[in-house]
Length: 219
Image (cartoon, rainbow, N blue to C red; front, side, top):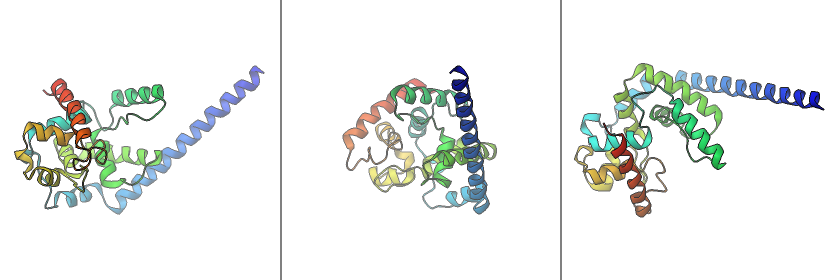
């Protein structure tokens, strides 16, 4: 009986390794295919050429600080992946038996948004990691943060901080006050759920979480 159990465990482990290797290899090929079609620097340059692209020094510091605090407060301390956030998210998801936290860094989210936005599977996550590692090699943290706030979706058809700032408040990103900045910073987690046109009260509740994180993590 024990021999049979040991054999089953071995088979399960072998199967898990094979599946992991397959996902990893497939993800790598997906990454190579993506950057072959459009190299990372070319992709980023095309985003930066947009008329709506806004440099970091033309965006409210309250907003960028709030984004880092709520989305990835260790952003300036880790690389493409944050092992601490990933371990915490895995533990919470296993404990709650549902996916409540993703553990993705801002860099991973940039990689997803510029290359793999419509894919939702493990292969995409692996490909996203390869792009994220490359982004960290090529660009500074401030440049990656700048990319993030310019490509992320804020609900109500607004992509990028300039569209969100102008369409929600009739202001340029640099003119956002503390209340507006912390409200917008809460939207990217779930833009449809927090869209200001239809879910303003939920967005305000999310804003409270942003302010709490900003108070705790702002330097």
